[in-house]
Image 1 (cartoon, rainbow, N blue to C red):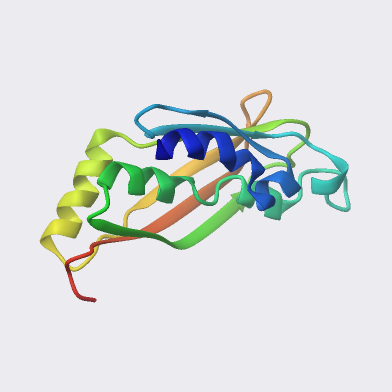
Image 2: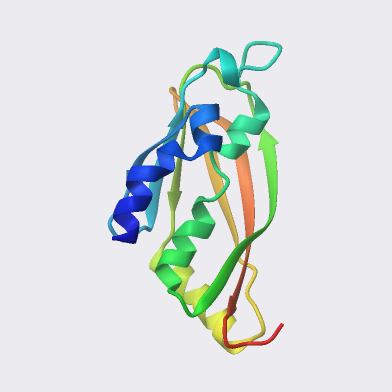
Length: 150
């Protein structure tokens, strides 16, 4: 039920509605999510290409959401840090595809189970229509078991 509502409602979340970000696919196991953003007058910068903040916004919560759904309610998952590297101007429609492998989930789970916390790092590329990299976004998560004290 939660995944169904997420899929239906995330496109109406005000930051996405305002920046023009569209979630176009969420896999049933929430290990793959695809988003896109068209270039519009409201997400265009002074020189006519995608505003950097909108490029970052389209990548913001997905690794956290995916990890939360796959680890379950015994874990606390937060975004801890992020870095974005712009590679070329974003013109037209841009895309990002987020993927979590079972090995990633198992590794994070083991680190959180055997220590005070885990801080995995994931990278996603924002691509243009030709498949060229517009931006690389690195996300650091904070994960710990709820039954562990800080």
